[in-house]
Length: 310
Ligand code: UDP
Ligand code: MG
Image 1 (cartoon, protein in one colour):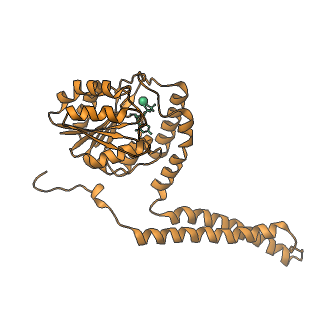
Image 2 (cartoon, rainbow, N blue to C red):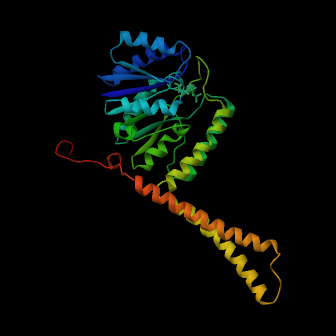
Image 3 (cartoon, helix red, strand yellow):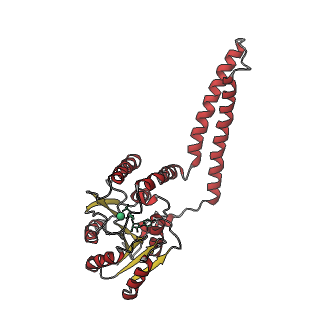
């Protein structure tokens, strides 16, 4: 039982080839399956071609965004609609090869919630490979989930792991980190990667660069999303402390008889004390807001055992 989620954006050249290739392998892996095409606001003939496929194949469903939102949103939507216990994702451009899916299945059986492809020999532009290496290095340094490749389109999830994701912007690049953060078991297997034979890549090096702030957001959210006071409090106390030291120093000079009233340092000291308090209080307000709206969603991080699944 498997749901295949495929984000498609202007893939009119490849979608039919993709479907043929997928169907050469998918039925061998699972007797029952569904294929979910999430059309991400394509402006070409992609949607019509997908509809033609769906007319012939009852296992296909298509959802279409009115405009382009990005791969992260397309995947998240597909996960929400998926019905089966295992969810497979692949790019529609045939860079991820359906023939490789079997490797992910075999690995998943060892008890993993996410098996991600590792494009050992990547077939992309030089600039993209460099960017990607940099991202992968940053990610594995900051998060302790050590993979070689976080952003391979080929991934196999358990339903729980996939449905726990709420991705936007460039967040699809770090899915293994987000999934591991929630306590799911994550691993990777080497897969063959192909050049893009049809259509054009939607992510050039510039787009990667503009989406890199998402990485900062993620770093912040994963570390401080639930306790902003720790972040703001630390910065606030540091700035406040420097201000106090400056003021103490000037007070001593004052008691020794030196005039300090016109010294720029005095103003800096006052400014730092006030800013420090402000920043600290901002953290307090953020914590209060979070507490008011806090609803713990334990369903995605808890396992349930009952007579059915023990
Ligand atoms: N994609 C999408 N929305 C976008 C950009 C891409 O759904 O805004 C899809 C695209 O159709 C493909 C997959 O995401 O199936 C990966 O895109 P692409 O091959 O352009 O990325 P690359 O492999 O070059 O990183
Ligand atoms: Mg591609």
